[in-house]
Image (cartoon, rainbow, N blue to C red; front, side, top):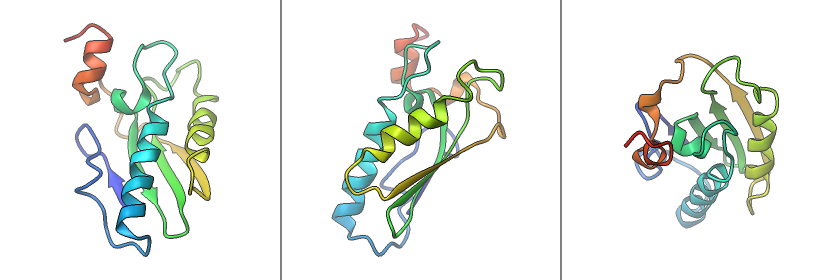
Length: 126
């Protein structure tokens, strides 16, 4: 299964591709992975990384390995070296996940328009 974030938010139900994981388990696993991502916060912004739009792609492979492509609000972010570990720990704690790989990218660069309405409210922009 692949969840791509082309514009702003990942739509779990629309990007599910063929998988040997039973549909109900895949839906639960997807929801649980996203819930885990929502526990990770950028320490400089009062919103979680999922709602900030820092997660560009989530792949859940048939062996339940979760691969995440993410970015940061800026390449010089003070927690650039730590945040991938926070993501790996949070998602790795999800029941049924066999492992986690986190890759960073700055292409395309993050912009505030990637933020969800919830994140905009949290930072006082809405």
